[in-house]
Image (cartoon, rainbow, N blue to C red; front, top):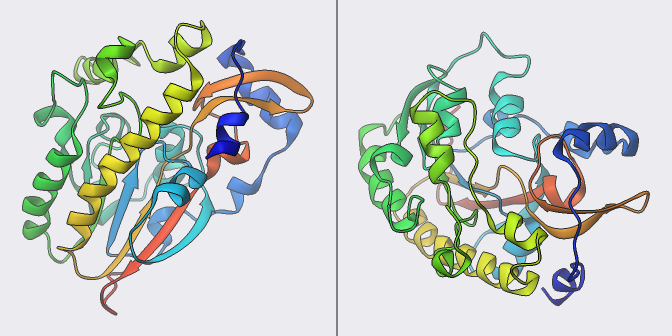
Length: 285
């Protein structure tokens, strides 16, 4: 990950979010458009690690399986959900899928699209960390899976997405608290204070952000490992999108980008892991 750290600088500047789609069209980055919708891929269990970069997963992963990569259809969770489950399929229902989620955007955007959505973000929330802990997702998933043995299951962890479980208080961020409140109160979106805000202002250092991001990934993989040891079938571990720590968006545009803005499909944001663990030959169609 030394190469990743070298990509970031000490005095970043931020690009206004509203121009991302225009830059994306000019650059004409279209690899993500070649990807299939994830519901069309063969799997029994799809485990989503929110905001997990391919290079970070490759660096940290110790699980046994086959590592590939795909290009996600979105560079943010809302875009990922829309492009996979709503785009050109607005009348299609996924009644053979149960979606277990620590991310509130699933309920906000995909109501009534699945056999059932289990909103762990709502009843499994951790006030201290302002997120859903991976341990909670693991425990709840085991209970839920036992109720739906004949369904395909999506399990959406919140990590390695912020807040950083080890450093949230040190960074003084709000985690995912305001976004959660917005969904509960039926508002469009909440505004959380994130590491990206602090980093762009120079209040924290990039190397510390990367360090804690990787620790978040290590922590969630511990619980993912326990989970897959309890499952039988074709298991895919992937992500909805990647994350940026201040990389230059493109040689033509010398803006430093932080986080994961929608509609900005550079490789680092849409290249995500596609890790295959096959524990049997049974795949639910």
